[in-house]
Length: 275
Image (cartoon, rainbow, N blue to C red; front, side):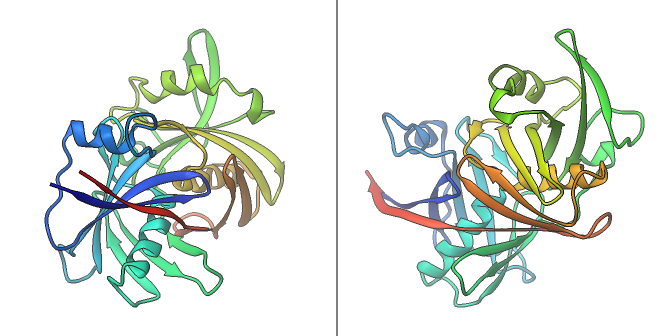
């Protein structure tokens, strides 16, 4: 048996992308390990699977697997790579695509400059939608973790996000606090943890500890979550450049009850075959 794949990245957030439009692909733990392992396998943050549409209102189904085997419902950088992959493979000649994940329907726009814009939908702040154990929605939540009193915002973009503001992302305790918050009991499905630094009303720096993957060089939905929280806190405007370790992402959000838009590159690295 052989498996053809394409290695791609979006601002350093890297993926193995698989075409399953003709035959069902169900990765087991051993195969995911071979695909994601950077020393003994191909190496990536997540495995993306493109499937034939399950309904008439979408062009493709889109599945996202973490290295630990969990399937998640959202990945903004992955969505951009998926759009570029579909075009490169000749699976569609449309400039605008609709794809369905486990939790969301996304709209993808291939731009003339080579970048891809993704409509990630309307951010959801109600605790039950995240999901997050809290008696009511608040702009800022407070929790004590390991003796520290922390303030953060929380929301869902098809996946759960926690966003904290720090003075310097390079000094943020991501390696220790990220895993601790990811598995906090108040987040029953775990949570992506963002450490955000405001540079100006139109610019943020960001590092993200992703659930099931650890720190990645970029997190598209995490960048959108950071802008949404920062705007609610009146720290940014509606158009923000977010600097991540792998590059810069452009986010646009008009405000509450409006969709949030992510724009960035999608790069093919190589094509391979695993036997």
